[in-house]
Structures are given as structure tokens and as C-alpha cells.
Amino acid sequence: MAEILPIRLYGDPVLKKKALPVQDFSGIPQLAENMLETMFEARGVGLAAPQVGVSQRLFVAAEYLDDDEEEGPEANLKTRVKQLYVMVNPVITYRAGRQSILEGCLSLPGLYAEGAQRDLEVRVEYQDEHGQKKVLEAEGYLAVVMQHEIDHLDGILFFQRMSFADRQKFLEEHREDLAEFQRQAKAFLREAKR
Image (tube, rainbow, N blue to C red; front, side, top):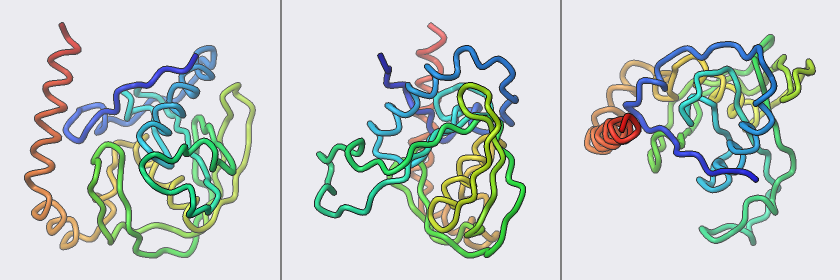
């Protein structure tokens, strides 16, 4: 039975740490299942292990069917899944087509910004949840998702991929939101220590 995990918000130190490679795969299938359930609940397209407080090199992602009829806050994302991905110890081995992209993040809920620099074609070598080696060639939006999630494994948030000027503008425009996320992150960590 899958469990919904709390998503760590901006300001939580786990989001700044470089995650450790996965060596023991025994708990990975259950963690991945929980992460997928959490991602669906949060209406996301990807979720990295550090975002649920686990500093390991693992993320999950979903490719959805384009079905506008199912849109809206009540729509069940699971019915729109085209392909699910569980990627352990991912490494980008090829990239091309750099472009400025609009991005958001489940650890910065409700905030979106244009200007993150991403490649529109990537090749990712990874292991599945059982440790089997795989290769994925992705383009367009899926390539962006892969880069965004791998950045999480390196302690990088999407706005850090913007130019200095764009990053400063983002931080200034969302100062109050970011401060609130930091307050919530600190409160969560205090509560977790009890």
C-alpha cells in the first residue's frame, strides 16, 4: 500500500545536499511507489527523493497523455499516464538544444518562472528500481523534466539555472513566498525532531 509522503519545501537543508548513490535496492520499489503516489497527489510530473527527505539518487516522473477534458483540480492524473519512470543513479550522457524554459517545482508550490536554461534532447543512463541498467533518450518537455529532477539530486533548484539577472528578479518578486516556505520548512523539521 502506497503512502503519501510530506514534500520538503524550499529552505529545507536536504534540498541543498548532493544525494548519495543508491547501492542497496531492497527498499527502492516501495519508496518509488510512495513517491509516485505523492507526486500524483501533488499533481506533479516528477519528484526526486530529496524532496521527500531521502538523500539518495532516485527520482520518479510521469509522461501524461494530452487530454484537456481531464484537466482541472479534481481530475485523476493516474488515468492520464502514458509512461512512468523510476530512475536510480541517473547520469546524463548526451545533451543538445539549449533553450530558456518555463519551470515550476513541487518544493516551491505555485511559483513558476521563465529563464531556466535546459537542453531539449538528453540521453540518460540509469538503473530501474531493481538495479537493472537502462538508457532513455528524451526530448522536449520530458527532457526538461529529467534535467530538473537530476538537478534535485545535486542540490540545485530550477531558479539556479537562470541568468544572474533573471535569478535576482525571481528571488525579489517571490521574496514573501520564499520566506513563508522557509518558515514552513523550519516548522516541519522542528516537529519531526519531537
